[in-house]
Amino acid sequence: MPTIQLLSSPGIVRIAVIDQQKLLDFAIWYPGHTDGFGDVYLGRVDHYASALGGAFVALGKDFSGFLPHHPSAKPLLEGDWVMVRITRSAQGGKGVRLDARNISEYPMPSEKTPQRLHVGLSPFEELAQRFPDAEIRIDEPDLIQLIPTEYKLRVKRSKESVNSEILEQIDLLETTEVELPMGMRASITPTPALVAIDMDTATQSNDKQSKLRAQFNANKESLPALLHQLRLRNLSGAIIIDMAGLPIKKRRLFQEDFERNLRLDPLQPRFVGFTNLGLAEMTRPRKRPPLHELFASYHGQAIRILGMLERQFKSLASHHQYHHLTLTLSLSLKQSLQNDSWAINHFEKRCAVSLTLESDPSFAIQQWEYQYA
Image 1 (tube, rainbow, N blue to C red):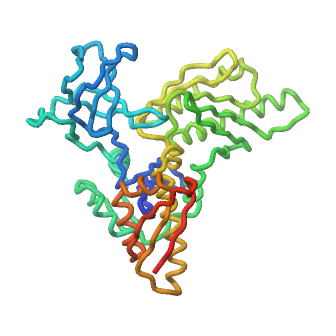
Image 2 (tube, rainbow, N blue to C red):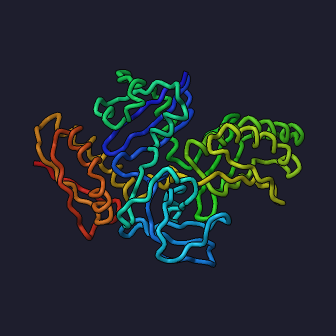
Image 3 (cartoon, one colour):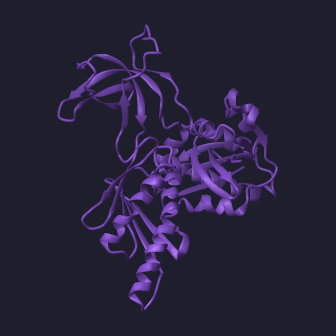
């Protein structure tokens, strides 16, 4: 029976779905910094871009999204009011994508101003619904306050730490190199246009037939693990996979393997086929941001610094008693962290200290320092 384990550190909750020491699913949850996926807004059409086949819709101050025109929908004019749902969070340098269909359950507000009408599911709620029979384990009592009422009967305080093997699997999700079965490995390179994956094998043999057979079997055994990594890392959009050491004719024999394994993914990716060069093509729907973007964002970098600061401060606090910390960051990271009051409060409660944020214009993005009193 799978379990959903919530692993907390300042400003962030890692959600791991575990079954028999295998990581079935994974998500990053910033409770104070929502990605907006699934939110419903009342918006105003700012500009209809016929060349792009849709309209830009204002959702709030300095916040807008793109609404593609659907053939069944009436044409939109600048100034029109429309209710929309975010169907793709901001990612890949692009803003949010919107949809105006199937939102009839929300009445039109009397006050005509861009506003949020409904908050979408959090990453936690999404996984809790995906695994309805899984027990939910929390490593921090205060996390119960984040969990909606309908899931609280499934919650159990976890007194045991998560197995080191699972923690290693989670840590490896931040790397671009993936170890696969049969001595295989894969290098993952996200680009603005697509995700490129290069599979490689250490198989060595002087017998050409034996080597080809070994490479075929290694690719076949490794493919399910590789495609599972796409799900764990939430890689999406166009994905190109260069399989290891096989002629093009042999690669085409893997179409059924791709299709069978992709059916296990809740986002239902689509296998497109093989290019003339033998590269496997697939698409995975873009919804929430991929892990590498969450970690690389200004907010993700600021949250990582909070985690490092907690470790350093607790080491100091074991010898001395301090009541206040001043954290100095680059301006971009300070502004991002200031917008996440939950993360700051979470840090203060975990460390039993008050925290003040400062910025230094001379600091590089990842540079930081702290003072204590």
